[in-house]
Length: 157
Image (cartoon, rainbow, N blue to C red):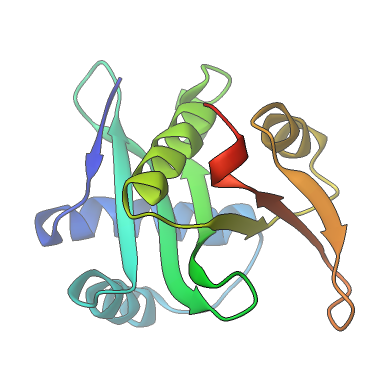
């Protein structure tokens, strides 16, 4: 399995995975065109990075989207894992976990002081993976959703 930062040349491969993610969630929108435009915008900006993983057939089979913003509460740059998806045929092989580790490494290299994410608390496999990687659940005061935080300075991956 090979991981790397995605380039604009990977847009169509990522789009295929994003559409698979949308369909997995049983959603009808955003449309493929809206996703394509969104991917282009994210990939051309400075506040997001996509990382992709290729399987042993050299096919991109997963991606993770890392977003960056300055947090006055953390007094530094915060990274947020916004999306993580691995194609169904490449799951249960540690691919998702390796993508998260890779994203943590990249966020650490950018000197992010926190890494957080939102996830579906009804997905025990994913919840277990994040817990194994050092994330902890916190309830936010205003948003009724679980959020996991990883203090990059205190966790070794």
